[in-house]
Length: 294
Image 1 (cartoon, rainbow, N blue to C red):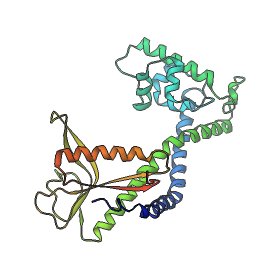
Image 2 (cartoon, rainbow, N blue to C red; image 1 turned 90 degrees about the horizontal axis):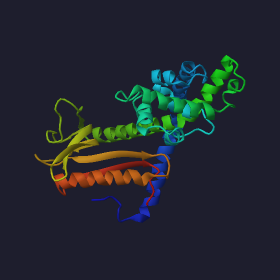
Image 3 (spheres, rainbow, N blue to C red; image 1 turned 45 degrees about the vertical axis):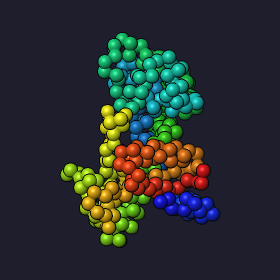
Image 4 (cartoon, helix red, strand yellow; image 1 turned 180 degrees about the vertical axis):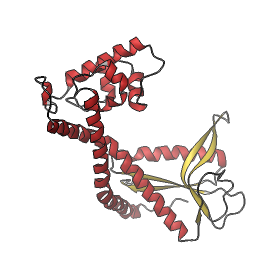
């Protein structure tokens, strides 16, 4: 049964407490996460500058040898360009850019001459749009100083860190939620079971719980089966043999921009579970952060 679903007058204090719970944690964790990510990313940018002769040698050979530099090069332009914009400006295959950025490699089955022609286009666009304020040595073709290289690498790393650090922060917050759930359950006599060794929700004993357990469901009238990963699976203390466990999903949001997307994703999971296991499925969303009443 939904908790407080019919008591909207109680929602505002809950929302405020959720936001405070997230913000207090963020203020302590996020600076450390950002510093660590920024340090690693700066080192990656410095490597990219070395591989491209400080952005003077963005050739097909360099991109073929180090395809992982592409996201860095996109952040070296004025203005920084998204990968979709790069595809459009260079007129290259979306698959090429997707694999270079996602798998950090060149598509293995593509004709070499075709790939080199597209890498040439990418290099030309990057060099045409490179931010000369960040890389001043490109104006007159001189050798950059060490201080200029470090400064440029730091600026580009800062541009990259927003996209890189957000998932780290979100995942760490969800781990914090799972730790909170574990503490609450163990204080009430529940035992944690590590996943693996053939563990399934059907073999769990009363008074046990596990994290990141897969629940199999059938789709398309039984013609396809998938596994739905569940953050927390709990077999209540008073359960009987054959009872379906209690399921909890931990989700967090650092702002009000798009929390409804996460709600909709979980609603689809819930519908799939109910279609397979019936109306006795109990599915709780443990939302933390900026989830309002909408």
